[in-house]
Image (cartoon, rainbow, N blue to C red; front, side, top):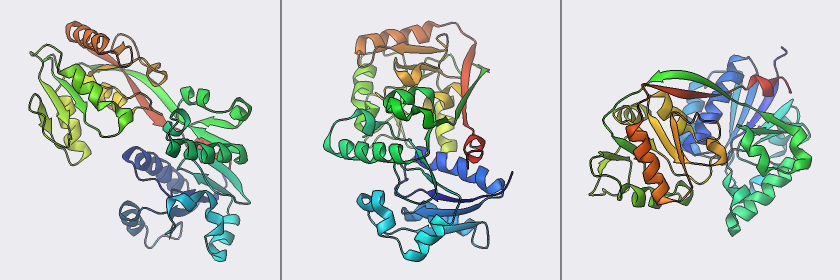
Length: 321
């Protein structure tokens, strides 16, 4: 395989899921011997990453100071030298849902589903830029198959599905009836529904909420500062409760199953991949059904979880450059 010059546009990418996805692809592309140019706008994380490659001739970092609203037209704001460097590369991968115009092969990664399903002003604006990038890019990168339904049918021949799912058997972590969930202020994560449901379940359950802003007196509230601490808390429970209305992947579901937890989650396109013996799906936003499925998970006699392992195959992308 011929090594390539590739631009990675991660301007605006700062969520934990987005950073994790970028790092996995970045590691693969570096290890494959490609010459990378990384355009970034979020200082702390990328500055630390840049320091790891300070003496590398394979990775060049370029800080973009322009605000997010200019990013769809970034080619007009970058210097002539930077634009020339970009256009002398073999391809550009836009990680933040949309990109800007270049003269080279373009890939756009759809990693936030909300602009395609929400109709408030902000998401409508983002949807416009996403669909514009979808039309002008040679390839559209998605993580899982259900995302295809949210994209224009005339563009589906451009899609590369990078996510891969493998099933494996994992011993059940606990039989203690413990329920664990994540707190969130993001409306799509549906934390109000989680609280409403958990306040109405059998009081014999010990409920742990990870990272709430304020302690909730009815429950065991825990703050974690890193992934290792989070995994430890998850592993101490029997059931992971999830309530997001929409997900591009829903990584916490996969992580919980790999730790041996039963999963209770809404019946939704993003949960269609999960085995029904280890995953208990309820009607979205139906408190009574969610409680019923928590009860079913509690009395389930399964000793092993049919866990799904999620990974991404970036070789599919490299083969198209």
